[in-house]
Length: 319
Image 1 (tube, rainbow, N blue to C red):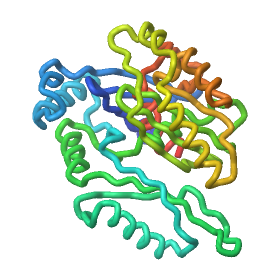
Image 2: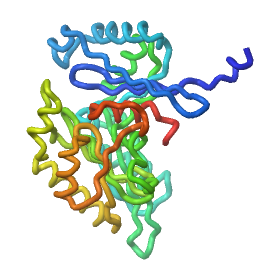
Image 3: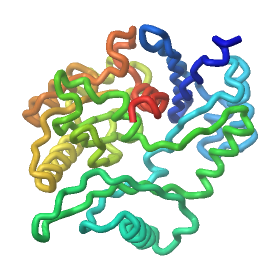
């Protein structure tokens, strides 16, 4: 009884959305560390054939089945909306008190959304605060905004399926939790780029001194089809536009912060040795494979959503 009373609450499930299914990571604590269980649930053919605008009832039934089969009733869940459903902006403000900054951010968000603030929900975080020296002091802020209607739809979906939605996170923060530290000795202190090459979007995130400093989502992808390894071999050359955007992101960060990016942590489709080599040659920088949970038995090329789901499950553990 006492053991049960003092037992730690389970970590949330990390749930990442794919075009044709859900990737869920469950992390269980042990004395020696953590036990990680990664699961994939393909959408039924009826859902896939219907397209993106599937009915709410069909998705609830799909999730209910997952809850029942895995005994996840009332389990907390952390998820993230697809990049095309989240607006992320990086802004700069002059030094000011936090209350004034809150009002300044609200004003900027209102301008970005053309005054339709009531239709959205947003949050922000200070990513860098440079001490004022003359007039050069700046406060760097990252803003994430989502349509309020979609946020509420996700909330009701999970509640009706038997889950407890703990948070809707953003993918760059999830990648930071899952991948940061894969460059030996960096510890997150030196600036690095996290690159998650996905099936629909590629996510870039710059981490400096352990903090998410810059985030971008790009519609630059590799199409894999049925034979993943064959497709990787055929398309070992990255799209030139994607390489240009990575370089542009690195140059922008260096110009803004006067600190060069020291390496790239690659995940998702970018784990192909050919792509890793291509990135290193084209960008002239250290590139290492980012494998969430180093030392665990993993697929050779984990799907892009695996790192995202892992990072979502680690919310509250590696923040």
